[in-house]
Image (cartoon, rainbow, N blue to C red; front, side):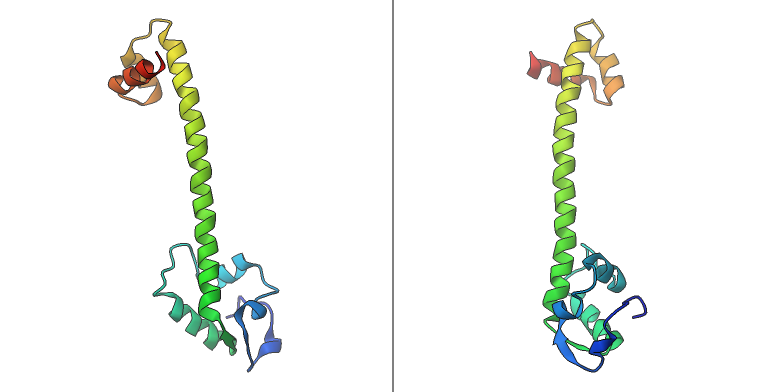
Length: 131
């Protein structure tokens, strides 16, 4: 593949996949071969075949290496989801504090609901939980 910048030194050889790509950033290899978090196990053998044909090298452990690249991409997504969930929890708690504060000024639930994008019933439920 034109995108893989290195390792013509392995031409017509058998080597381990991790060794072959040791000088490359995993993100580069993922991008060069179209490996994403959404890549399925069923797609990996075709990517391995394309990699072997393009690079002209037999890579031992290629499927395991490609699976590791895919799994790392999935771990990055999972970490992002976890970070967003934590931030959402923090922001929801902050919103609830402000809802309670502003409601003490006499603003009706309908007005508060319009401000925060909740139904009046949901606003009442938040205020009742905080009471």
